[in-house]
Image (cartoon, rainbow, N blue to C red; front, side):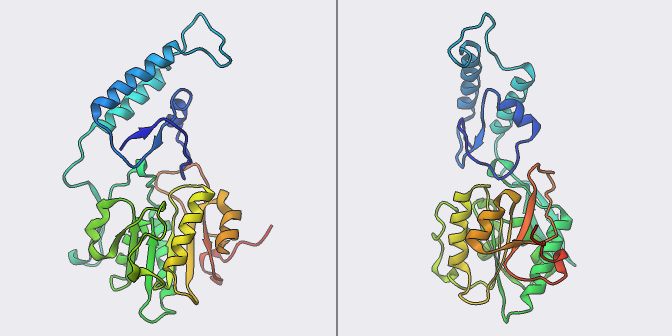
Length: 285
């Protein structure tokens, strides 16, 4: 995973550790990998640049500008983590059904891919809502766009439910034919057999930007059946206006939470009236 030293909107809030680094170095996840030696050279180069760089406005100072010891230690720890070789079998967390044959495993979240799993209560609540909605349709088909946690809980809740996971992370190939590789930068680069065949779509766009939501919206349009399809969108509160404009969805009272305790407020936007479920639709202020 190469980290590019430039800004790119991430869907999750920076934690305090990353905020300290952002003073001198801005780390943004990319979907590629660089060699460990290159990272060590980059660290030395960055620290050297920070030591010799003039202050803003080309004003020289007697004291060199350097990374604080705390920020440098954090950066070293971060890059050291990137040097760790990938395990042949990635670690997993498990959610088991009634017996061993029903067990579905979820790989450990990778925040470098903007992966942050839902808290169990959130995953169970959304899964229960999807299963309830599925009863409206004969042979219901559900698409999960970039939300593998929900896929796991849906299969736990109803193993017979037809669920397709669309995800960038190839580790989820373990789910066999229920996995489809998905890159939001290519919103309709999907198998034709998936076009207009899903009754329920749940989407969790990887970034909190209008551009990302627009492309995911294209994917939703590609996947959904032409009439009576239902949409659940999990994204940041900051996307409220864009979500309403692009997808015609409204927030419900229920608020999703992530196990990583993210700083951004997240919401569940839906395209239908849930009645009293999910706390009902939020009233317009």
